[in-house]
Image 1 (cartoon, one colour):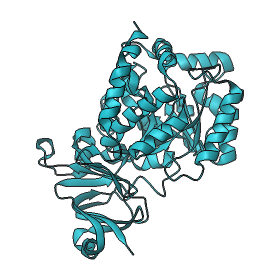
Image 2 (tube, rainbow, N blue to C red):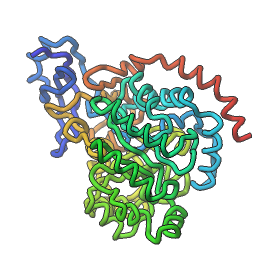
Image 3 (tube, rainbow, N blue to C red):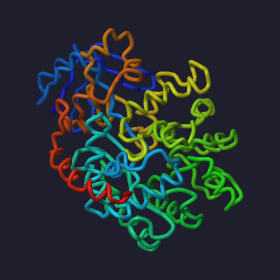
Image 4 (spheres, rainbow, N blue to C red):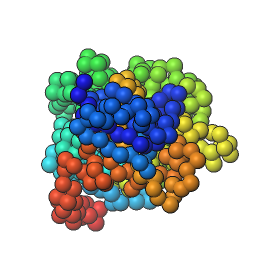
Length: 439
């Protein structure tokens, strides 16, 4: 067997179910998949035959992070609307988006957002935005995997589409990307308060037809809960359950305001919750009941939301908040364990993508989506436990090398497929027009 890549002499944090850590180890990769993982001494023969051998000394090798909820193109509006709760904030955001966004500017914003994510070690993202084909095009330009698809929104929305347009676009998206190994097709209605029951079911019927994923915002604020309850006579989660929208292929972003029965519904249906602590804090939405969800058996993944609500796309910040926020809120030091938090950003994210058999951990046979993190830094010494370091000390600037399917897409902190300076210049040129939308 031809060996394409060997990484050795690293601290390997596999993120597998057994939480295996190899103090001096690595992986061998062939045709984009891990063919061997273990101690460095066991990799010597593979290294002799490998096309590329990387010495991981002074680094942690781990699976790439998986962002389960993002609006990457909203990076164009970073810091534009501040100090408002979600509902009035959204009105200003949609005004700005409506004035600026088209396929070209959405592609530009996606390039900016995905570049930030990939440079920080995120190798797969579930991204909800108006022009999903442009989202895929941008993800492929930088070299990452993405889950996206047809947007549903009652009324014309930012893109001006009719319902018939949305149905046709959603169907066409599945047909275009059904066989792609770097795209996880989905339908993505915005939420139960912006999409009526029939259109929610239409979106779900399309994804059911094609065996795809389904994602929407849910129970983000008390105002949303009151709105849905007033219209349909039940809370958001009960409403979605009544419409038969919840199962293991569904990811719900936020889920901040839930009662015990709603948590039990999510556990029973196998629904994934995407926890977005930075966005929830900054928009004053509240603190999700993550420890209660974990205790009930709900699958919890991790997300950044968009840079317009959290100001950056920092999964390491989200990870640290997921591990610490609930300890303080509950006054229980064991509210979320270190391994539970790291699992949200890896294995649970893979499950949300329907790709737990391929992604989320470093194991033989899985895709070689992995990152090398520099631990030759003052904040990494001494390091008694590499998992603790990842959760509580690692910064996105510590990520040095990123591989997707064995291809090195970040080398020494620089993108290998995409020249970021061109994107930065284009965004800077557009910035005065963006600023004028809220002037």
